[in-house]
Length: 187
Image (cartoon, rainbow, N blue to C red):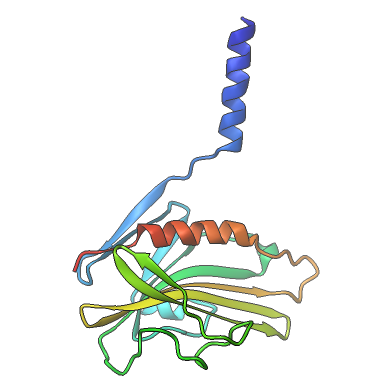
């Protein structure tokens, strides 16, 4: 009986400390793209993806979609979302960021890359803080089949509230990493 109780207690602890999160898969057959996202997030497409946002557009071309949590507690006074843009305009430079394109903390060009579904993407980041707000962008971009693809994470918070609580960056980073790992191109 003692072993049965210990086993049950262990199962309860494992369940509490290791919650599982179900995911859904989004497929865009028109543009040849798919990815997974947490079931408590929502995918917004079309013009709503660009207009239902706290962020000025940092992307190149058309904002295909945004993926964001369905609910963020009010005390955070902000939002975060993952976005994907697509452009077939050759004027949209989609390779290594230019030295003055984004403000970096050390003022050196960003030369990091990441392989996403077998394609090498160039990293960029940008931030803006002041006037009681925090805006942070991180993304990757590349050319696939003569089209510029840009995948970006955006975080916004307004600090001018007595009950303000900063986001836990580790939670957002984990969701961002899982999102990037799930992106697949079929064209």
